[in-house]
Image 1 (cartoon, helix red, strand yellow):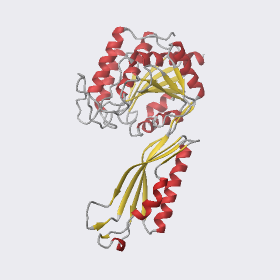
Image 2: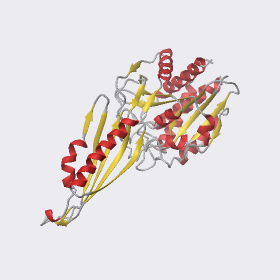
Image 3: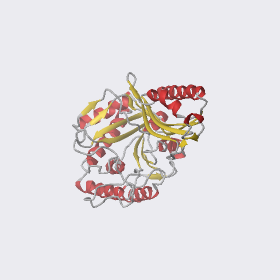
Image 4: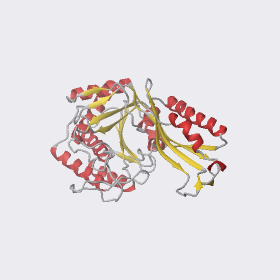
Length: 385
């Protein structure tokens, strides 16, 4: 099977799909219409693929089985958008859902995955099986875990999973990748502190959690290297704006990051342990909770080599990274359940950053990503022959 390129008509078809998805974004766990629209599109344009539902909330698989032994290859794209108001008044496909926008480029990722389907339809794989996974709830870090618990994923049992993320600030079509740690593990961490209020005229008659916060602060906001670990204090709430009352409650929200899951756990234990000691010293009650947890993305070395060879065949520049991306991606859960790799692909040096209200995925990247996915598929099948 030879690697393919999109025709002009196929590109226009995918661009139209991308614009439709961009205009009708839905946040995590609510991607119902997005999934229906993609399924309808696939029914018309990808007749060789069987749709398998219940891949976590609104997620689904499109599966092609060759009937012959060979690698079981899965490619993933994300369904969800962000709760951000778009600020692109000059485009004809601006978000029609107030307060929701595809400003992370997931609309483009879906279009490229559909592009892979179109290319595969021309000359269907003669060995193994191919699955296109449309995954929900990536932005909250919950979708991949839900998918791996579902029947479609476990019935397919991928040997390898590939995914990509567009990356503003890098040349259009440039590939950025590394073996091992590709994206940091992260979690949101709440520290809830409860003391005792008093009249503001007698502040020391109460027991303000501020007594814990002051010595704890240096351990809440810092960055360490080798390995990379980051703690960011993102929100503080102390008492209420009641000028006659000394505060009795405090909530701290942190985002903590590390290169590996076990390092993240260690970082969390360190922060919580320090807080517990101080809370005990000052007779302050403490409770904690995790939210929006992301596993580290660990790239398989062979999968990285497969991607690099695919990029070379397509004459795409490849940049080997020395440090992982500092942001997180929940595809790490899929890689833990199987194997594979996440790559980043440049979306232009003059594009806004991800999650910016003016971000709009560049259509010119659709044929590049589609062809790269297909070349990766070809290489993977050849490697297992």
